[in-house]
Image 1 (cartoon, rainbow, N blue to C red):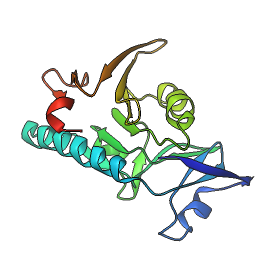
Image 2 (cartoon, rainbow, N blue to C red):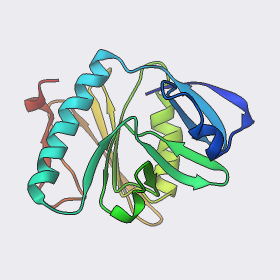
Image 3 (cartoon, rainbow, N blue to C red):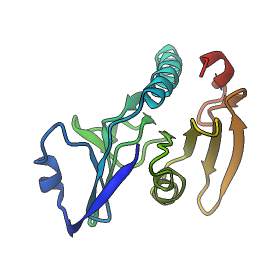
Image 4 (cartoon, one colour):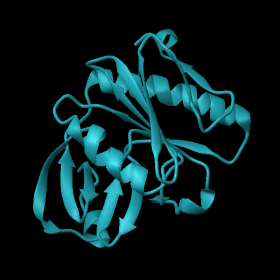
Length: 184
């Protein structure tokens, strides 16, 4: 999803929570960025990937849960850093408070919007790595590529795949997503 424009004033969590429900926004370093609605291809990819992930997680019968946007992730309170990843897996139930995830999800997928790809490739990559996400996928419908980042404490590994590949979800030992079978 793409951020359209930043507002100059710094926003608090209380101000964010008082926004109308139909407003889609994220907050980076206290500045609010309003988001455009997702495209048809974005929603198709979101549905296919979240369905595959959720089916696996439910069959595992573990403590992890799959969430899709709009669902807030608060990475920091001061300055406020609040993001709505397209798809996420959260395994620590203590991070969930009924409204949002407080802290980093274990796994995140962002589906690139052609109007502002730098959000996913640069800005969110930076925050996800530095706030403790273990694995981050950038799914780009335009180039039909998937970048998979595995974050370690002081480093990361990245691999590039295509929509023809079968890709391992590294937070699990036995989960693979077959993009070709998804029919994207």
